[in-house]
Amino acid sequence: MVSIDERAVIIDNREPFGDWEIDTVSGQHGTGAMVIFWREKAVSKSAKDVTTARIELLIPDKEDVQTISADKGRKFANHDEIAKA
Image (cartoon, rainbow, N blue to C red):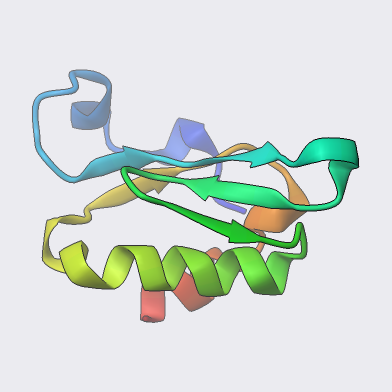
């Protein structure tokens, strides 16, 4: 995990394009989730599935992605794998 306190100050200005926020929305009865960027994809709530979905959703616009802010949930644990992709 990288603390939000360590992100670049320029992100707080909301001026540059490429700084994204991510979250999930739980399915009925907590059985699954949707990964939400500017697109969405249905997944299980496992970190592996959320990581795969994040990479798939980011690839078309990877040149425009500078940062991604997420909560501390375990589902967002594989940030280093996403950065490499």
